[in-house]
Each structure stands twice: as structure tokens, then as C-alpha cells.
Image (tube, rainbow, N blue to C red):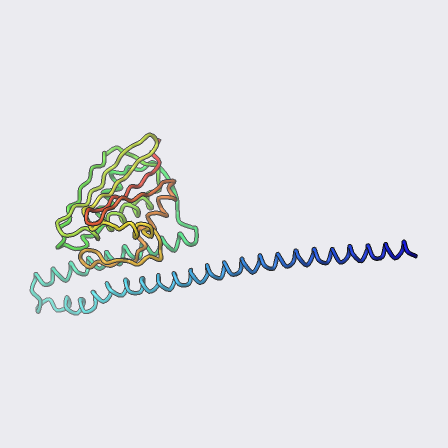
Length: 273
């Protein structure tokens, strides 16, 4: 009887130990799950806040050029009452606004494709000199009164291994950003350097420069978009797309800048074989 009782006590003790171990495991799993849920909830709140801020910026920046077009059609519909020089100014205004909207919508489309992971990527040997000319032609004269001088020092035969459409977007956004923050009479230049299997594309400007604090958030979507030297506005998407597209092309982007001395954006891409 004593032996049977001892075995019963041992069985009960083992059962109780098993219950305690299982309970401890479930408790730890519950705490781990709660911690993950809190982290996910915090991330969702941050994403929602970023999304709300982003859509606010987008709504404002789409509204601004549309307002600029308001009433232009009525003025141009009465040619007999308008002087030729006034009509030329109106036509220039329409053309400039249309280009701004086109660039904005291009960035929005690219951003949406990036979020879905379906951005087309077809790398091939590309002539950087020709790609740069295409981007310069596409960049509008954002403020005629600024009189920005564009300089190019790219060899005509230099090639990188990259996707054509994303390289075009990289150069267009870097040049637009440089023009935006360069004061009237300033200079924006684009040059290249080759180091073994890498091609370095450098976009320099004589603009306002970027503080060390702002450099840390330069490629983040939730940063605030600043006005250019002539009051130009932007969504802040351009530089974020530059970083994403450069990394898509197996490259890196660096920034060197000093306040009131200008900035230099350096993009490294694989050299074509």
C-alpha cells in the first residue's frame, strides 16, 4: 500500500510539473504574441500617420498646379482681347504646369509600383551620356527667372549596366532637386567617374545646402517637403525614389553637403562589361 501510495504521489507530482511547464510555455507564448501585436500595432499607427501626411502633401501639390491653370482657358479663348505677349505668357504657364503635373504623376506611379513590388526592371548596357540628355530635356525650366546654368561633363561612350526607365527617373529627380534648391544665377553640373567595375554619377549644385540633421532624414517618405529658392514645392517623393531605384540597380547613393555651399549627390552603378 505504501509503495502504491508513493507511486500515486509521484504520478501526481509529475502531472502537476507537466501542467506547470505547459502553463509556463503558454504564458511565455502569450507574452511573445502580445509583444509582437503591440509592435505591429505601433508600426501600423506609424504607417497610417505617414500615409495621412503623404496624402495631405499629394493633395496640396496636385491642387496647386491645377489652381494655376484655373481661368487660363477662358483667357486664351478670347484672342482678340489679349495681346500676343500675354498669350505667350499664358501658353508658357500652361506648358510649365503640365510638365510639373506630369513629373508628379510619374513619381506617384513609380511609388505605387514600388509598394506593390511590380516595378519593371530590365537591366542592360546604357549610354549615360544619352540618358543624361534625355533627363535634361525632360526637366522643365522650373523657374525661368532663376537662370540656372546646366553643365555636363560625361564622356559620350561611357556605359553603365542599369534599367533605362529607372536610370532616367534617378537623373531627372536629382537634376530637378538640384535646380529647386539652387538660387538664381547658380550652376548645376553632372559628371562621372569610373573606378574598376563601378560608374559614379555626380550631380553638383551651388545651392542652399543641407544641414547634418536633415541629411539623416533625406531619403525618408515622412520627412517634410521644403520649398525651393523660388518657392517651388514638391512631394518629397523624388529623393526617396532615387534611393529605391539606385538600390534596385545594385548601386548606392551618397550625399555631401554644406549649408550655403551646395550639395553633391553621388550615385554608384555597375559598369557595363
